[in-house]
Amino acid sequence: MRFNELNLSQELLLAVDELGFTEMTEIQEKSIPLLLEGRDVIGHSNTGTGKTAAFGIPAVESITSEDKKLPAVLILCPTRELAVQANEEIRKFAKFKRSVKTAAVYGGAGMEKQIFELKRGANIIIGTPGRIMDHIRRRTLKLQNIRCVILDEADEMLNMGFREDIESILSDIPQERQTVLFSATMPPAILAITEKFQNDPIHIQIKSAQKTVSLVEQFYFSVAMGRKTDALKLLLSAYSPSSAMVFCNTRKMVDELTEALVKSGFHAAGLHGEMKQLQRTQVMNSFKNKTTQILVATDVAARGIDVSGVDAVFNYDLPQDNEYYIHRIGRTGRAGHTGSAYTLISGRKQLFELRDIQRYTKADIREMELPDKADVIAIKKNSFVNEISSYDAPSHEAYEILDILASKGIDYREAAARIISEKLSAETAALPEFESARPIKKSRRGKDIPTVKVDINIGRSKRIAPNFILGALVDATGMSGQDFGKIDIFDDHTTVEVPEAEMDYIIDSTNPMKINGHQVEVKLYKGGKRSEKSSFSSDKRNHSLSDRSRHKPDRKRSAYAGRKKSDVFGDYVPNRRKRVKNKH
Ligand code: ADP
Ligand code: MG
Image (tube, rainbow, N blue to C red; front, side):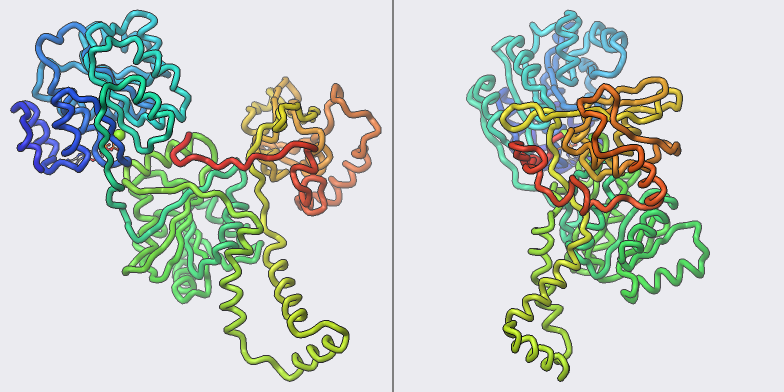
């Protein structure tokens, strides 16, 4: 159905036409007529299906010249970016409607300008719940004339902890109103809001929209700061792609990552713009003929590369431009083959960036958890069967050895099983391990986990920020950022709260350690609980300094690795955090 088949005003049809919209999307076709009638609606559809227009067009249409003074429509969005984006799009719909004035209100920006816009008679208000609450409290946002409230990306707002704000705002708005809710998922918390605040709503559900590159399955992994390289190694080992591309944003990162991969035994080569043409050609040829399995490249260097049979693309760094994402993943899934794209992210900021990419590309990028050793073995089972089936016929000597073994009571089956399990453990022994994220303080039964403080001889005078400290600790220990507690930065030193049970391991793996280019020393903080006779005398530290100056300690032998969390933490049982898709 086309927009001009709707009973819309000339002003709106003109604006929609100027935007180049002709056909409505499914969610628009189903929801706009109901919204124009004033019905309450629950719109359940993915990102990129055109929800802004679905609620924005009826909102603009509902404004009349009577609405000069007071807000009539309130739109709640989860983030500042989304509020700004929705505001811009709604302004475009209102281009020829003089009576519409919009205001975007969100946190992290000055109040004055927002108050000015509100005072000037804005009648469509778009904002984040927290800041809207602020304006309500200051009475700079008046609610008595609000006829329509729209919750955009409601599930995301709940994930971000806005539930109370939303409920409070909805309770403050006159009951004679239209309440509209859009959400990509429908968890029970959304249904609860619906139940409480909507009036006989109509539920519209739209099946997933067309994907950007439909033959490429897209996933992302959230990994602790400083552990992307390990995560990549783990994924490459687990999936053993015969041909894969890894994307980084800088030449330096390409070089570092290639070196790290080669050191760990992967057939990897780097490609970036500052390499000589001859060298680039060599790298490309060896990637094309599959001698090099893994090509680590920058976007610019990889532009226009058309290699068939690339099974996987890894985004080590998030692309700097949304369009790059499409280019990158388009390197796989070519010519009707399927492929997979894996994106590694660390921290909230990158999660937001990824969500932005998702919106832009209209892609379904699903979160996966990193595989653990058991998962890798399970994944490898099949490739082992194939590999062994493809071996040449065994030699005469091999049978002789089997006969000798049999005479010692190890029959053929047992012998074969031993060889296979050796091979399996050889391939999985060096896999990086990832612990599930967990809080430092509380055990599952609410008991405090005993903690001590370590002291690091660097502080504010060297312009150190907590994230430098945390990043270095995570990097050196392989532990999760959440294993570390409070960080106090003083002028010339810093203390960090750590689980007592892991203190020895932490000291051991952090000497030596560099923070921001400075060599630092990590030791137990004087005020800590542990007595002086603890096992890390200065002797031991000196020893580790001289002996291991270039090596990370072997985690297998440390107190931390090789033990289950429950051993280390007594009755603490780690709760494997299954993250909810789209969660922040
Ligand atoms: P959602 O909120 O569902 O994620 P958006 O409202 O952000 O989706 O819309 C995604 C993109 O599609 C935007 O660039 C928007 O301008 C465009 N769009 C929306 N509706 C239409 C339409 N009917 N025809 C063409 N483009 C549209
Ligand atoms: Mg949207």
